[in-house]
Structure formats: structure tokens, C-alpha cells
Length: 295
Image (tube, rainbow, N blue to C red; front, side):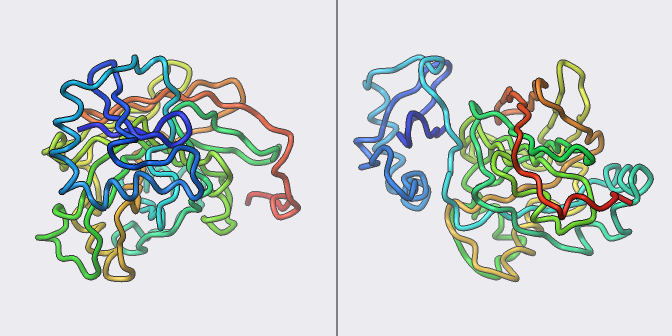
């Protein structure tokens, strides 16, 4: 099943090129604050799935092109991100910028990215005005936690996965704290919807690709991950309780590079979806912390 947030927090099921609004069935209130309707759906999905499947058989459909898709989960408890999780990316960062240590994701763990950086498939990436720094794209798979828990074993980990989506992790290059460099508003586009885990059975061979202005920059598969999906869940839950709707960004492959105002970034992940995101340059977002030389 493909579950989407759209038009101010409504919940829909995507079927081919159409969407069925299931908001009333799920008691989802549009434009509510905080925007947690999808969290309730994820938490209660086992009991709701049959009702949803029956409802969409006869319910009216709307063309997907006629609605505004939003980031599927706008208010997760946390966004967990794994850096340096592809060998080729580790090498390009060591030789290309000197900004990464010899530690890989299996040695340095994960970090948190601000929830407010989340944006949707129809929102632009808004670049801050930091003239002396490069801002890079990073192509990643998003994992949505379905069943929460603590100290989850590898053997049980996949049972805690609700679904997947495309995710672009945007970053200001530098040596400042990673969370600051990655947490500008719009620096975490996620979407276009959540594809439930049963539709993506081969978690260890999902193909990812990202292009900028038609030029392919990143192409890889989850088979190349250093820390695989079950181990990410095991590692994160060893430290903190995972909750329904939590998002895990699985790390980026080689090929990261700069983006600029006017660019078009396209991410496509096999069996998961595709997003085409505009990049715009803003006049705000600067701070003296960025003034020191990069090296």
C-alpha cells in the first residue's frame, strides 16, 4: 500500500496515478497542529488495513496530479541518520575534502537531524545565503518505523519496519556540528509517499539514483551498505526507544556534489518512488559561524 499526506494533512491511498482520500475513515483532521495524523495511522495500521482496503475498492478517486503531496510524516519523534555508510562515499570524502575521519557508520554510529528540516515532494530545497560554502545533495532511502521498541535484535528488526520512501539529505560542507549543517528548513525532502514494507520485500537490493539537471550523480544499491537495515535498527534501539513514525535515513552513496539555485534534483528508488525537487536560493540563513575558512 502507498500512503500519502496531501492538501494540508489529509491522508490518502495512492493507486496508480490516482489517490483516494481516506481522511474521514481514519478520523484524520486536516490542518491540525501538531500534524500527527499519519503517526496514528502507522501506529494502528494492523487494525486499520482491512478497513482501508475495503474502502478504496468503491471510493471516489482523484488524479494524483490534482493534489499537493506533502512529506508523509511531518512530526516524527525523531529523524535518525547514518553517515559514512557506503565504502565509496567514505573514500570520496576522505580524498575529496579531508572532512571525514577514518570511522565509518559501523564505528561512529548515527546522529539526529531536526524534524523541522523535513519537507515534501512539492517543496523546494531552499539554500541559505552562505557564499563561501558548498551545499551538497545526498541520495538516501528513508525507513519508517512501524512497531516501536528498545533493544531490538537483528532477527526481529525487519518486523519493526513500516515502510520506505525517498529522502534527500542536504548538507552544508564544513567542520561545524553535523546537526547544524544538515538541519536548515527544507534540508530533508521525503516522499512522495510511504510504500509499505510488504511491497519492497528485498530490502537488501534496493536501487537508488539521483540526478541534477538530468546528469546522474549517484547510483547504488542497499546491498552496498556498510551497516545494513537490520543493524541500523538494532544500533539505534540499543540507545533509545524507537516509536511509530520515526524515520531512519540510511546514508548516501558516492557521487555527492553541490547544488545551486535553479537546479532540478531528481531522486528515484526502485519500488519506492520518485521525486523531482526544485532548488532555490534565499537571501537569509547566514550567521558568523560560517565565516571561518573551510580548511
